[in-house]
Length: 315
Image: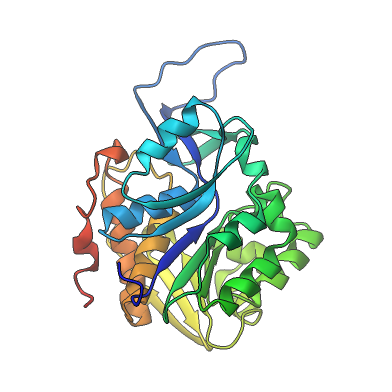
């Protein structure tokens, strides 16, 4: 990608995922459970998004951190072909174990590890002035305490450097407390693209119905910002300047592993936005990307550029 083209930078959590399934019931404490499928792979929302971009044939920049153990070196190998800027931290690599349940739900156990140490100074040192139309996607601020402490300032600076700011908040481990809601409201004022799922949208708005929740959250964004709500098998909803657009995708069949579904959607949607797609087409690209990635297991079998057809509708 030449310097005069729009750039796609991804800033956030990079870790190691161990995905196991399928678990039909929670085992008794002290027992052992055999599971038929597993994959050890690069994970975290930022890495998932960057890998999805690689599957689409894009060349993103990934800014995050790694530990200083053997797993960190293994993790770097999984990110081959991606422009990585990863802060090396004196810590074990963060590991997340994802258990996939028979009803489609997931349970995660995540160690603190190196994610505790990524600094705003490192991020800004590796986020250059952007070409026109560039996008910086920020992921999982709740898992990155040093970034979280200065998150508004990071978003403001990214915007000042020429990026459209995209944010996927993720879920706060402490829940949507009044303090968390006030904190997040401060972030939203600096977003050009806010990427949430249905439950996150209703939690931020304090509404149990989606339509009023969308209206409430949209009012917290700056004029012209895109609020994107991921609806799983029901597609995705986009809201811009009071106008809503709903794309109903075709659900992928035989999905075992839904980890990273929202991250895959984010990448497809933002990739289409970089190519000046309208909102409906960008939502469609996000849904197509997720639908192409989710049925694949193991994910590391997907070759670079193999899923470029998900963006073929765009110049």
